[in-house]
Length: 371
Image (cartoon, rainbow, N blue to C red; front, side):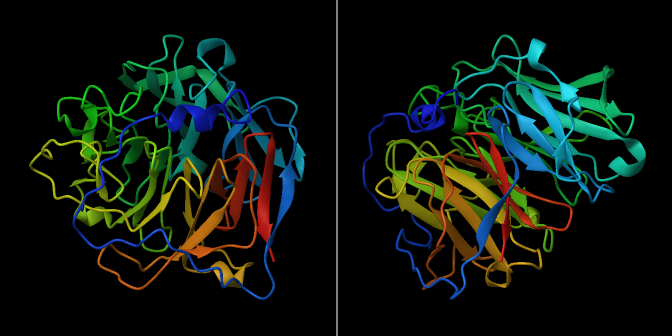
């Protein structure tokens, strides 16, 4: 992500596509563009960040935003101003560039009292690390670091990187397939590998488990704050981008990669038995973009036209779409709605404490969606 298209070039690696039925009902790439009469717009809340990758709020802190920079810092935005001193600075202990770096932060649900937080980054060797810190309420304390997960990465791309807490209190970790193109090691379907998986960590015991397999690069995923449902934007190979939706109670599932890309066959190999195959609820071809950026189900109050809709976009084209949060793989006749606004270099979405939607542009700007 060091240049305007570095992330896109890394995640949209060249590969072959064999068109075939993938089974299961899923939404087509067609879209509707019947947006609201008065379109929402973006209002910048922070500028001049160093390759931001994520934005979020901490429980119990309604007036602060935490902004993650790929190069290793977490910045605090409060009262419309960025603090000069970072909340956490890991720049001396990570590898950054391309798809590597400091990729996300998640605050414990009881952060207001426990002051526990978790970061996902690539260490100096390029391997994935998930580390717990505690804060003093103002900044994270480096001496409290506790590594919960280490995963060796065979290539410098497809690191995943998202952290989110589910309603079950577990910390969910998105892991890409390890990189290169076409999952050459078939790691996403390999139950002995943690690559190409959605993992959970019990932060009390450190126990790690597999919640889903068959993912290529789940760069951004989220939980619906109203229902607890899981939504994933899984970056595709060279033809299809996909959005997945599943109730957490239905896990574990197999999302199909690298036997399937989106809803079409990619490799002539069997799926790993043991978890049911779950197809995407939406796909789009590379004529519309090249790297999906997963978002959130909007549960805020300011933008009526988006209430109860899952909002996602594309890094390369900047297009934004939305879907009803009720859509499943069995839903028919519901197409994604193309929203009437774009975000250049859309690397992430985020939510503030009230559930209002944030966008993160790799060029350095974090914005809030307003009427």
